Amino acid sequence: MSGSISEVSAPAERRGFCVFISTVCEGLTPAVRDGNGMPCVFATEVDAQREIVDSLMTRLEEFMDGERDFDDAVTVEEFILPVQVLKDGTVIDEEGRSFGKE
Image 1: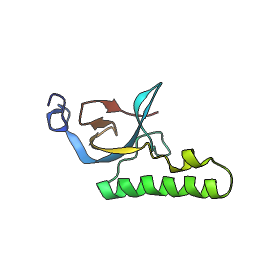
Image 2: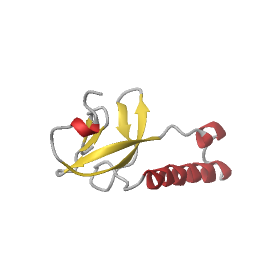
Image 3: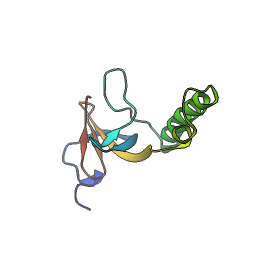
Image 4: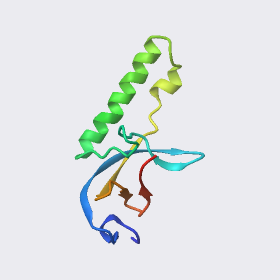
């Protein structure tokens, strides 16, 4: 597959997993970012899954408190992709797409 993680020319500092969402305006975008606006990279897929579940639990609590409607609370749009992280913090997905500071 062209542009796969193993074919990215810049050397990866590390590999990991990011949580993404697909939006109408921006297309594929990292759903979780750190305090510096960089995509959060999780060491394991399970860690990334736990992040999605944590967000879901927050939305469910907001529904129970009357702050969010049911459909919005139970809909999970986030998904996980394996990534490479370059030395500058840029994240490269398996299709070769690059994500950096917001």
